[in-house]
Image 1 (spheres, rainbow, N blue to C red):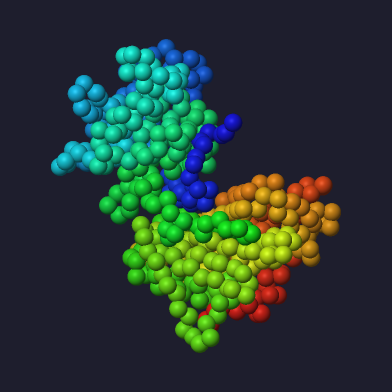
Image 2: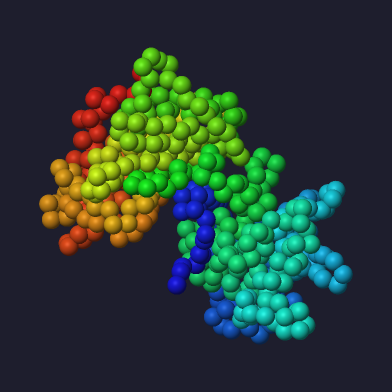
Length: 453
């Protein structure tokens, strides 16, 4: 069983998109109201009383226009519009609707949708009238009529909404149970798969789900590696701060060089200045680095809109095969470096209309840690809950509100405490003393200065 949305996106990519949606969302209450009404119809059995054709236009306007942000023929005040119902493919075939760019110049189909009556099994063949094809197969047949531009297939029975990549008919990229979308977090994950930015994009930015599924892409975290665990930390500003690429690259260099504890994660150059090789792609700039003696690899990335992400590869099993625990002080120092990096990246004067203080949320993931042990040591709140083992491969903190350049030591301690609780012992999760953790960073900071003053 799964929750409201099951996704095949990379864990870190999914949560980066989720955080971005939550930060930008201004109509969550209205959108959740639409989904609650859908749930009410389902509970009362009202959906099952109607055929596909009676439901679909209202459903398209409510879900795809109001919730997902697509402009329909009569919404949004003009062209181009993004949802074209009953789009002919070939012969007598017509898809239920297409998503793309329509109404100006040549139509471009980015996704094709197949809708079926409530309760229809989307994987079961429907008989001779449908050439013995299942709804999913019918959806792919229509989508392949647009081979040059169509990249996704949507299939739904108004209760379950499926999303497929055009090249993979067997594995859905996402399955959403619409009636189970309950809160803003569910809504953000739903929109990360199905909204206009996910499937179409705009002139400034490629569609999120069309960005390469490539571990070397600047927005991707470092890939999993043997005998290493990953810390993935992310900051998402409440207000997007659109910056030109030259400013983004300069900010990335400044942040890496000025953040405290940087020498733990990047090898200090023998002679300054430190040189960073920055790569760019699809609105993201990143720099990779490593500290060979510490057996650490790092990728630091930032988007043109201000989201900052850091991945830290930490060795947790030495070559002799003896397991090395996930050390809370290492995680803590990585988080402090990351928060200092954000300070540097966003250390520019606000432009007209932008807030003077940059606020947002920090979320931190631990990945590849199933079976890993940790010991809080001197940072433990209680000796009885100082040690534990992770039963999950990956987990994430809640979204932690934070103002840039404000109480970074305390924020790092809070994030560490949320991660530590997932390591479980006989008496519960590992408990970290927040004051001791913050004090540890203050004590260690003079011994771990920035890479360049």
